[in-house]
Length: 207
Image (cartoon, rainbow, N blue to C red):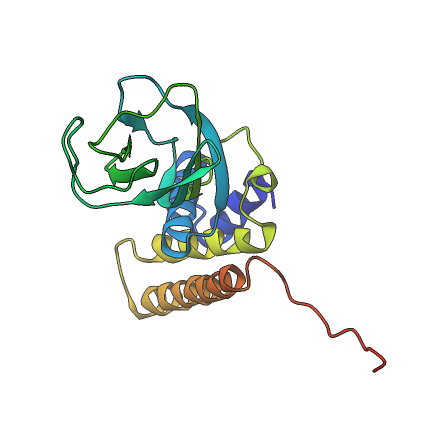
């Protein structure tokens, strides 16, 4: 579904909504879907360790960090902030990380907490926000599977019906499109639980 198609569907219900407002609503819906379901997941390898540094900026759009590897070794999540050069009871030759806001911190355990060696690839398995829809873009270039594009339209239409003046008809319409959006959320959660597989079938075997 292209951006223009989504805008046209919104304007069938709300002809007074302009293109800029429609795209703003679609992007808010897109963010909600990504955040509430962790719909998009990938492996980011854009960061590299630097000498005498523990702090790195998390890749743009990251929502949750699931696993981290430094080079080929898994790093283990910890709470708190160990101090470089002090004994912190961290296992020797093992990497550790913690996340604070938009930063990820990485250290190496040993007789005392140490900086990591330089030039090692930091691999982050994460969920992330899809790129914003733009006026000159098309929705099918988003990472989000196309089957979920209609949910963005449902959310935007429902939001439009919540604008004043409210009456019983507008309230019913808002509830209807909100329910459609929530139903898609449930399908998306099922899609994620199935490891992003649509299903399968049993292959018959002779025993």
